[in-house]
Image 1 (spheres, rainbow, N blue to C red):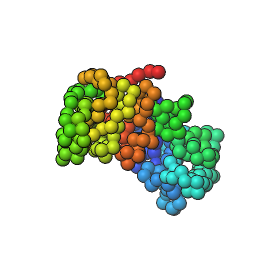
Image 2 (cartoon, helix red, strand yellow):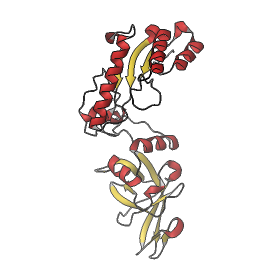
Image 3 (cartoon, rainbow, N blue to C red):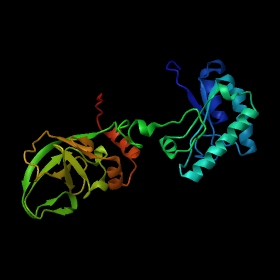
Image 4 (cartoon, rainbow, N blue to C red):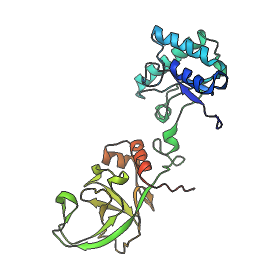
Length: 276
């Protein structure tokens, strides 16, 4: 309450819980979530008689504390998105026709970065475009990725032809190679799907990751990059010099969406905040 956080509600029980916690006169400003035949997770479905009755009860309980009406579209495919927008607008019309809420008094919001990129008009006051702000989607010079995954070289050694790398001997050297161990592994969210296909940047060069990904270590072939030493910066995602490991590349290599990877990396690694 002190930080003026506005709460999302979509059920009668949710509003009652807030009233029990804060008191009727101290409710936070509320945004009423509508399912609109959509995600079916936290929004109220108005297509049923029970849903419409619950809607009226929520509005009776919350009164003037409702400052927003919102939804989240489950798909941004053209036809499905158009249907979702139409359904959301129908739900809004029903609420305004059956309550004391006035359109000019509430913030209507729905949609995401993908909705913005679709070119369709969701007919809302606001879209919640998080991905573009973090450079996850819709990349262009104005919206660059805000995250880089970095580590350091912790060992450099020369290994002869015939040496195998990592668990299960999945990689065998066909000639003598210089290999660098890097303090990064699946414990840091550098997932095992990158075994045999991952790349890293060292001194602005893109280098292959060899062998299976270990818990705390990966191995890169630095034979063609003389002078690599312990402590050299390694970029596993993001830009270094003129080279970059892009969102598209890392998604293709891992089979995971970048938001999934971001949350994993963010939970498992120290965060260093830099200003550009």
